[in-house]
Image (cartoon, rainbow, N blue to C red):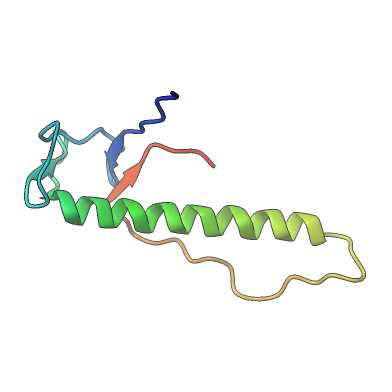
Length: 93
């Protein structure tokens, strides 16, 4: 089995959050650097939104690169807007 855990970071300072090991939804996680804090549920909602945005951004980038120079395919639409996420995950896609 592969362990694929990632750290949850403060969106402002990029520092790993501190909180309980086996959290309940209402347990609070906080940034040891700036003090930003929220419940586990809200932290996970922010991380989910960040991952969705990151995935959308990578997909858009891949599609634009694939269509670059093509006379048949044209990628149109607005670029994915950068969100303001209070909490993020330490991931690379």
